[in-house]
Image (tube, rainbow, N blue to C red; front, side):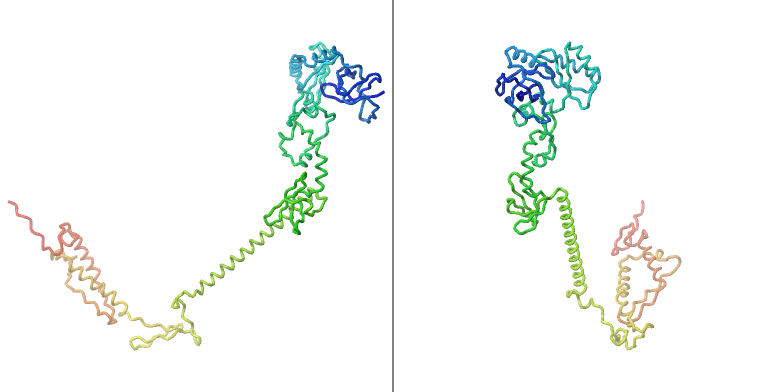
Length: 455
């Protein structure tokens, strides 16, 4: 008996059906089918003929007749009827039985005696008690079918990102496995919002072009693989699989896009080989960097030593700053001329010392100090005789004159000099004499006038 392929059910199932020889059908004709579930409405998708079935193909049923006006009216009534009460009852009973079930869709067969409800669940659910209560509440035969995310999207019906009806609704017969590797081969953004469909799974259309990308990928190098271009060793930093172009990095900061025919590369590289090559290239780069840093530090060290040597023997230094040269014949210093006709005495360590003229060195400073002292005494006013006495000691002695400058004689030490200086400072601080007195008299003014006599 000839068979044909028809689409039926809300899941858009495509199966083989036996068709009577006397029934002539065209493509896309609506027919009434008898399936395992009952009588349903279907659409012819492949004309009848002697088809060779594969082991995976099954005969789902047979074609009964063409659709009549009564069949079409009943189908529209069941297809677009109000099923909100079914959805409400399903949710209430699922909460009562505490089952993780989500309502997806429902349909009623053409005979009208059976209700098929589709639901989603992450795990397998034991819903035997749920079906018994749900059947009593609906007053009809209920068939529960658990579907996946893709089947739920097919049942609900929607439009994809391309603006067309979903592939699983329009023409896709079987779901094919889609992996993330397909998206990587096509170099598509791995954002889940962009590569996922309404069902939350990877888009089925990723599978359509995967075979072409796999074939063209074998004719271009992998990204990061070493290649030869213009006789230079470089590597590919960007690959356009569809355009058959490669962006080449020459290693000197220059990158150019070349055709695949202009470069030479080794085929058969894998991701593991690319990672190994990148590690080797990075190790080489680090070694070159360390060599440059070592050479730079050596140059800086040599420059520092050169500057230090130039400072030690700089030509701008005065010759007087240089130490006197040592005598070659002996370790003694050069002879020192005699002072005042007396020969210099040699030190115990074998070096000769030059005598110092104490009068020539000390006389000027000492004479300046001694000559300035009487001037300070002259500037002070005369004090009464009673105030000049201090502790009963007389100050009748006169200061000895300092020795003449250049005589070479040291002034004799005077034991009473510190005492006389203290007396002078005491007279200056006394209330009756000196500039620091409370009377405020000047050195040129005479003695203070006596106070007027009282009447």
